[in-house]
Length: 305
Ligand code: MN
Ligand code: MN
Figure 1 (cartoon, rainbow, N blue to C red):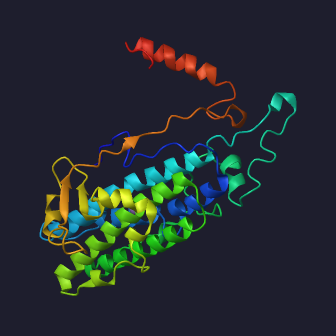
Figure 2: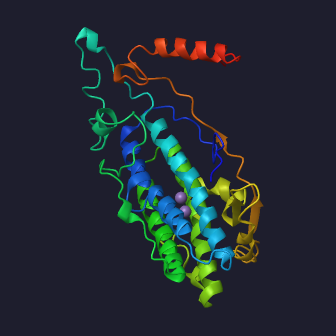
Figure 3: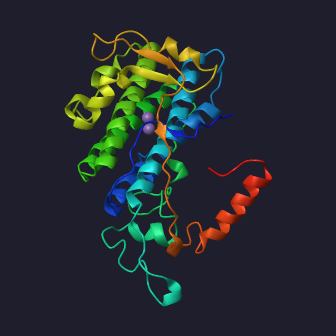
């Protein structure tokens, strides 16, 4: 089962300007072939279907625990896309005969989908607005093959993220990418170590793929300084401690020691964003909903913040 903490895994300031073109690029990191939906669901289904989990506990714990971190990554990508669309609001009112979103998303192919079918926020689609597919999940049941796929998947995800980075200078998008480069690096490294324990092959010598180091990317600097690249967070009050059997010893830079951190990162607050009444989000006349919410809060003995 899952607990939920109403915070983002990393502090991510709300963008100052809307940037729908960047939003569409970042949406690939959600619903594309190598997006967070794919890493999340691949590891999640592998954990659901894991046989002999008691006897193979460190490997089960690693996959289940990283799956949980990926849940927080879809939340991060979701926040980033919301932030990048925030303020790209319509101008005008239906009741005045206006077309408030006539020109809003002309800059991007995926843009109209955010308004026509979506909440002006994240959708489980790729950069073209095409849906994420369940058959992106890979789970053969063979532990070594699944771990090898996970290693490949993290490297594929890194490749797409590097290309996304090359398509936008938006500081909010790049800040999130910097964090995800670092965390994806931990995941690729962890799967390499798991495979090394099982087969003796030192796969981590191949990292990073592509051959550009996080230290060459300005937005990674902060996270490297914090040691994020050598930390595996344990996303459970008491479980998955067995990950320490895999995530230990020297890092890729032999002077650094790999560390399991008990509990999630400190992270940052969720965005607080106004509605878009012209798009009926959360309504055309939202003040009626606010009145109802206020009455419910009061009746429940609380007061609205
Ligand atoms: Mn991820
Ligand atoms: Mn990952």
